[in-house]
Length: 446
Image (cartoon, rainbow, N blue to C red; front, side):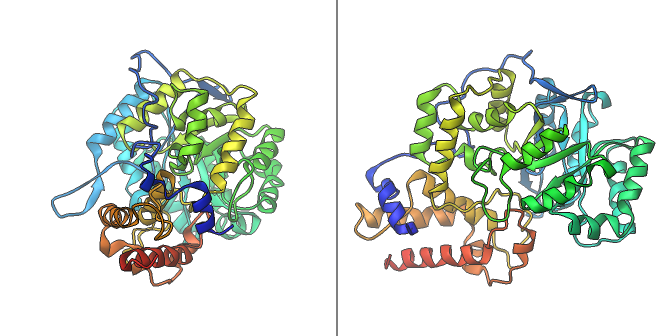
């Protein structure tokens, strides 16, 4: 079934019928997750070698930004400080960053906020993000810079960033001797736990698992959520396979993308209604977190909480954590199957594709498109009810959400972004499709 047929059958021209979206722009489901958070409420802990790790971890890839006097987007340090303070006050102690996040500014912003607290109150996770320069010197310089930023003492959790298999490991960390160096740093105590994050297919994961006895992976970070459990797209692995392989080896698991970049906090209305009928008092996002947290091998679940309402909603979920019941798993499998049938783009807004050399706001374009599909604001055909009104509304909303100079029309198909995308999205093709759709709307020919 093509997109047009699907949208007709699913009723996604529903904006013309007056159907509302299912979530606030913040990603918190409307009318759910409300209530004050007790000041003494704390998130539950998991243990790694006797060390307590908060089940909710803070992903520092999406810190809030503001526009400075020169018109440049910069990290809002005051807001970061407030978020970190609130998180630590409720027991969150795992903070994950990388030298490449937020144009290289994430580590420093995270460190400035964290170092206002006692060192024993937080755990630092950061990465060897050597994607371009694979030399030993560049890798050591990156590591020592991270160590300096976080106080020249130690890094609690250090990851070989975004491996896809043995050849990737060999090129970036073995041939240059960098992994040998990092193992020495682990033995010296300056790296307390050494692991890797994974993006790739099952055969590549098997190659890395075969090296476990040699390198002793102390933890592994994987993409896991109830969509990717059995509905992984592109060149990603099914999360149920990754989990099983790590579980049988006793390797603790760090979860990234539990919400698929926010997509599982803002699912299509028919799917959201199923979850709200089951538990009206919980947010849509809470289901995704509870899914991950119900697996015992999971050490911590990362969430990139940009705004206070994101953090508060997640704290409500975790401070009163309720594992899934047996009947919840098949329900989420049905939800995943339902969401998978919607014509969405699997963008997680990780920003790895940015900046685009031609100024296109890639995550912004994809985020707007997905939101319109979820909310039923996608224009299907000229014959739908109130076509002109819905068409004009869509175009106005697009221009408000994405600067016209940064829209899909400005993509030239250079494909520089494709290599950087961990979801393996064919970005130029999707940009071309969205631009053709918008152009038809502008001309009124759809």
